[in-house]
Image 1 (cartoon, helix red, strand yellow):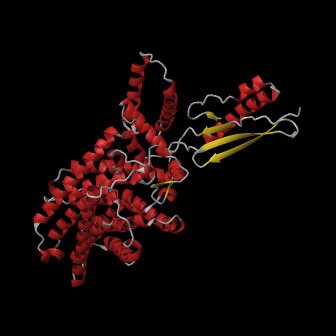
Image 2 (spheres, rainbow, N blue to C red):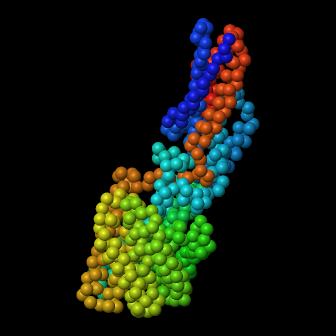
Length: 539
């Protein structure tokens, strides 16, 4: 009798499912045909489709009464203490095994193992660049698998980014502007009421308190997420924003800043000095944090804080400390300005939604001009040079209306319009006091009006998107990357190889059985379906 021949075909379906079909061929046509079932092994990925996985997790949570644990890895201490306590409580009991829940338990253990592996350390800068795309590294690459579900809304604190402090910078800068318009001789004809400054300052202080309280809750309950933001190559620049906003509040206070105790200035500048040492040291040391790689328009926030501190320090009589921060800021601003001019044209262009951050080019020279005027006591040559640079950059950006203002979807990035245009208006008012003319006074009034309308419009839109449409804070996928890349089909191929070995044993057993009816019938019986995530045989 001729030996039976078998052929094996392997196919991978789009639904992460691999099928292995065994075809039985009879070369002798004269022999009576015997019907042999064709076994089919179906191999499913250990990582099921995302929607089914999320639905299964939610179903298990609802059925067992347990809460959703998928976000524990971003909580303070990563949820490890709670898992240890749960294991201790569960170790004293010996529940009876439930075969129906074996697959879910195994999948849960695998998921927890991956979570522990990912939550041990924050991703490196190279990993952020590999997993994210876009000039601001805010979009997950298509080849990446996030550690959190993308198709459902995350907890609010996880979605609240450090960039929300940009709102505080924009509103508090208005309080500083109207105090300048009230005190400068060039704008005395406007007769700005001190009550305007008072209202703006209290609104700014209330907003600063609210945003600080929310982010403090994030630090308390989701410290791992804050760590990931701090190690993000672009997002780390926004950690200067809270202290810059506090400097604005101190400068815009209705009372004279000379009445402040000097300890207030030192306390506000200490975090900026710490961040300066960290950021500038990484720029100089090279490696994955070199400036030519991480530079973006948002990096201006890492420089402008030095000039704001120098401005406030000079007004408080701290001339030497103010000069120190001005010198540090000037050197690194020149390096950053040259790096951005060389990098931006040759790098990936900014998406349209991030075009507002280009206005940060205007903020640094505007504040630097006023800071140097306060340090030197006059709006001299150095202050005028910095002001002219800021004025030219302002005009060059406004001239491209279609590039910066049309088709730009609203987001928190729009607050990048507010602080720079307000700084330019304040610098123009101080410049007009030194170079008084109808043109400079008209320019100061015009830029101040533009700044006020811009801040009011962005603030109203922010309130509408936050409380009416409720889409101001989407899922922050930039912090949901894995510490190591995870291949989507690696485990599928591993299961295929394992199932192929099992299939060979099946073919060999049928071949060695010959024509025995008993052995044939025993082999032809379909094996018991196995647990989800392993090879499963279909009759």
